Image (tube, rainbow, N blue to C red; front, side, top):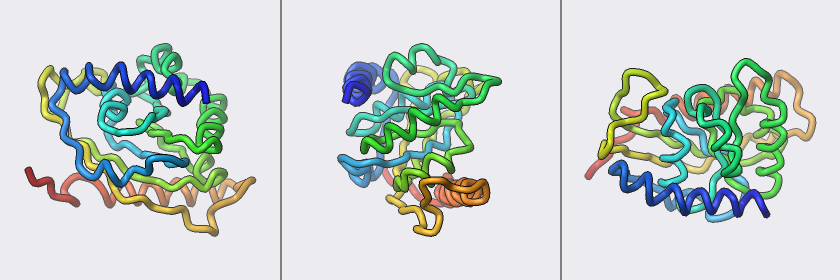
Length: 196
């Protein structure tokens, strides 16, 4: 419950700031369940991804981030989020992500490729979040102020029952990772049309 409160406070504080910094348009946000465990897989490896995801969605979300999206690591932990330490295994982060999902919370994944274990163990459904934003020179550079950012939320997808396991094997974890990779590939820009 404390973690949900931190995620809600972060959304309430960061959301207005990010929405005043960028012009964010969100499509199909109503498809995100209002409660219950869900893994939201974000395809944008930018440093601004965690804050844009929090600002775009209507429910508190914990962000599990790696790479450029995890650079504000200490800040992420204060807001109930999870930053994978660079060059070190993220075992504690994985354990916390599984706990959040077991408690029925939403976890957004930014820049993390290996989510199979958390999904296999919890059986949490998955949604893709595709973000269309102006290109930056480096992923560690946020988009310029007042940039237009489009967020497309994909449909809720349920893990095939054969892959759900309280003690998944390596092959099952790989299969779940591949399932998530395929969902993300199928949802990439160009596969949907944004009208406005």
